Length: 338
Image (tube, rainbow, N blue to C red; front, side, top):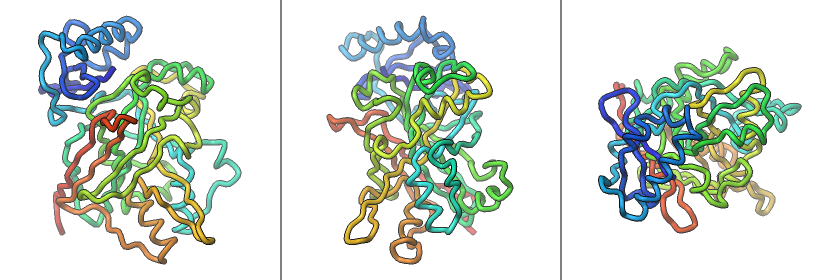
């Protein structure tokens, strides 16, 4: 099924069930009013939501209405925990190679890179991208995330996967020039992560069909800036750590509660080799990696970070060509243009 949260003037919004084609929706009132409520009692509430979903898809829901992504908050507007990884090692190696940053070669392929983010105020798919000024290096990051049920401390990757409830698209926004000052402190991001935007809907694993493959999502994540393609990256191919491994990493020393969100990091594909040179035919899922590719190929970056008035669109489509999660479609608004 597909679930969304509509704005209603509160911080947690109103849970709605959305049809498979994203055409219609129905309030889940009487079953659950908020997404967190459903996650806390998933075994009891999810079957009821599924029944409403099937009724909606068959055109028999009495109080259905046209679905409008502009009215959506994040599917889970605030989370108990938001942890993002760098599960795509091609992103890590490309960026660090371009900037001559040493890699942790002894643990790179065995210990996932993850950071704790701010989950207290996720934003919806059409929220403006606010930034103080262009010198901060505003960048998008197109990635996937899972919303979890309870994960016990010490869970194995397979056990952790059993707790995946929903999957969504994410724009994990980063201020690259601010991050340059934060990363040397070795305590992670704070100011450089101003917001995290989510797709209109989050979907259960059965909606993905065979695109859900043992903790990986085998869909192409499409990213554009001002309508021009930045990336068409395969989310399944080069994901070095699947979601079960990421969740197990987080839960190694503490339990993870229902309503936690685990991100994959920017979706990235390893370069191919042609005539002795590396090429990145599928592009990138963030401007920092695009700039890194330009440095490696041409000696300098030609792509600028986001500016006032720029638009970012992130989407993933299934084999039928239909949007799976709906699109993240945002416009940049700078608070100061100096």
